[in-house]
Image 1 (cartoon, rainbow, N blue to C red):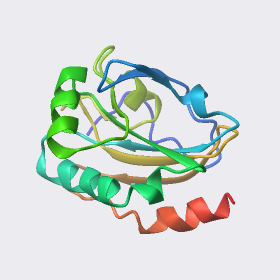
Image 2: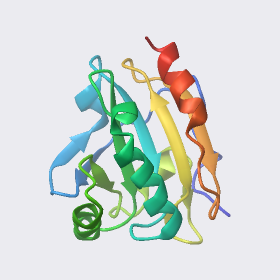
Image 3: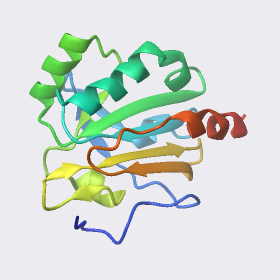
Image 4: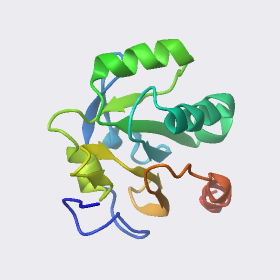
Length: 159
């Protein structure tokens, strides 16, 4: 696996800013949440794929863990916006699915989780505090489902 950046963003780093289109064509920026909410970024390889569907269903089914007055979940892939819309409609995902389609993988690259060879994001998860600093990360390779168990403790530490 090769990436455009030396490795995943680390705890303590300032989170790279971005603005991407969600599944409904609306611009969503990391800066929209600054000073107001923590943000959990969930990078995943492809809409409609088995492991990704299972992971986003977990988020959907336990949405209060990932989206509340204290935190906002943003799921990001390199899929086109229209694919994300079809997937969100099919799976009842009512949280933002952001398209990092063009420039292809630019945001995933900024976070060090873009696989150049496959043209996709790998499974990277980043919890960003209200001040824009990364406070927890989890990175899994292709075919490895993520385990959100450490997320709850990291989120609790922000309170």
